[in-house]
Image 1 (tube, rainbow, N blue to C red):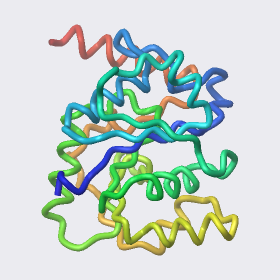
Image 2 (image 1 turned 120 degrees about the vertical axis):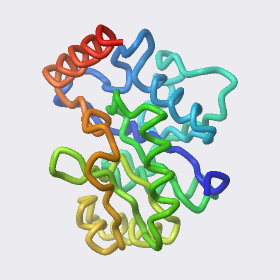
Image 3 (image 1 turned 90 degrees about the vertical axis):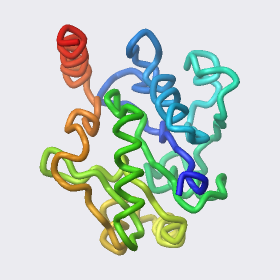
Image 4 (image 1 turned 60 degrees about the horizontal axis):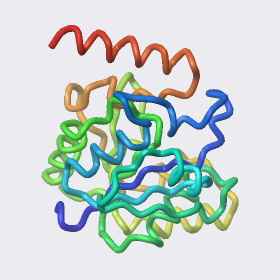
Length: 207
């Protein structure tokens, strides 16, 4: 399955609640986007970054040079993750895309490998989506290429709610305990970012 996989980071949001681009937040001595790129690379997957600010990412993102990474502009900058997913399917040829939002500081390679391994033995599915903290996380998920038409149709119809698309798919949820709950935690606000920093400091002190 791994040969048919690519990792995608969606960094097209406005970060309005954070007040600054989330993908450029500092995390473990790098930017958050560079951290996620590094974790995807650590699984052996190529990486596509979909962004409305590709020039800024190239200038300030501290991306790993020489890594198998491609940066592209979102096809429809104001259409949210649905357009980002459509962009990713149009840009990549792999059968399955590992889709991550850019604000997942604890989405480490060990967690990505667990998700991929689970999907490999989960039978037939259109999407394998992480369930953590009693909710689904559609931007920590695997999407099969057969879902592309559903996302294309939603984009053309102006239906930008990701959960509405998921209702049309065969979705397999991860079981309890498979994924670290912190791995699915988004940092959308300064308060959530500070909480993530505290958790990271706690984990470092326990090593």
